[in-house]
Length: 236
Image 1 (cartoon, rainbow, N blue to C red):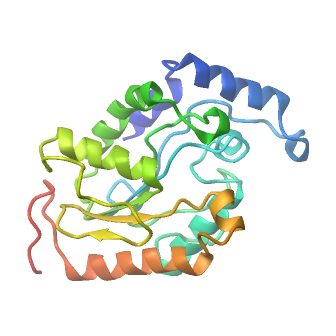
Image 2 (cartoon, helix red, strand yellow; image 1 turned 180 degrees about the vertical axis):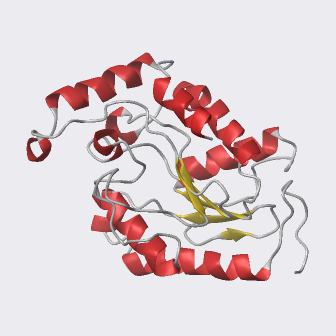
Image 3 (tube, rainbow, N blue to C red; image 1 turned 180 degrees about the horizontal axis):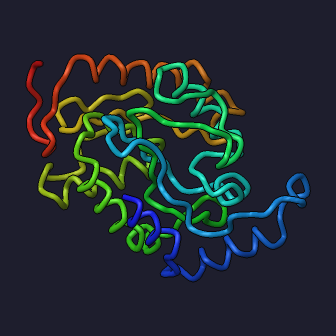
C-alpha cells in the first residue's frame, strides 16, 4: 500500500489537474499564505487492515491539497473526522495537519480523484485516469466489509468498479441517497451525502446525520461477516 501511495503522489497523467494543484499551491489562500502547500496528488490514508472503506470525491484545494492528507485542513474534514471519532474509527475528532497525530483504526479513506479539481468537479477522463489506483486498492484491502460513499460521484465510481468486476450486472437499480444501504452487495454499500461546505452550510447534511451513518457502520460490522474475497455474507 505504501508503494501504491507513492505512485499516486508521483502521478502527472492529468495535466489540467497538475496545473491547477500547482497554481493553488503557488497563489495560496490569504489565511494560509505562510504555509507550504502540498500541491500534488494526495495519497489515501488509514488502516490497511480496515473493514470500513470510505470513498470521497477529491482533495479540497485549500484542504488536502494544502496539507497532503485526505479530508485534512478544511470544514469537510471537520465534519467527517468528528463522526469517525464518535464511532470509534479515529483517535481524535479533528484533522488539522498531516503531523497532528491522527490515527485511523479499522478505516481507510480514498477517493476516485486524488488531485484537487477546479470547482471540485473532476472530468470523466480524469476519473478514468485515476481509477486504476482505486482498483488496485481494492485488491489490497482484503478485509473490507462495508463501503461508505460520500456523494453521488463516489457512489457512481464504486458501482462502476463493481459492475466491471462482474460483481453486479449493472449500476442501475442501486439508488443514491443519504444513509441508503445496499445490503445485498458484498461488501455492503452505505451511501451518504458528501460533507462539502455547500451541503453542511445549507443544512442538507448535519453533523447528526453524518454521525448516524458511521454509527450504522458499527452495527453492520457487528452483525455481518464477509469473506476476504468479497464473497457472500454469512452469519458469524
